[in-house]
Length: 73
Ligand SMILES: [Zn+2]
Image 1 (tube, rainbow, N blue to C red):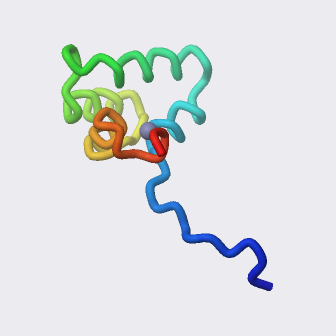
Image 2: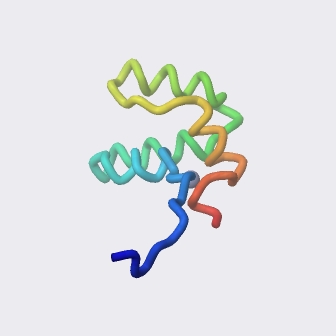
């Protein structure tokens, strides 16, 4: 019953999940915006995405940018 028991990975990356959930074209634009921290602040990007109907918190964007998320483990 407990074969393969592993600790739950807490830090799923919302940036990665969101990119996967978008169409390829949008996913590319999204990831470019996430990568461009000179143009976009965490909060500014979060707000601009919400306006377009993409819900992601500035904390999630910040974690990914600072490599604290699951992508970098
Ligand atoms: Zn990530």
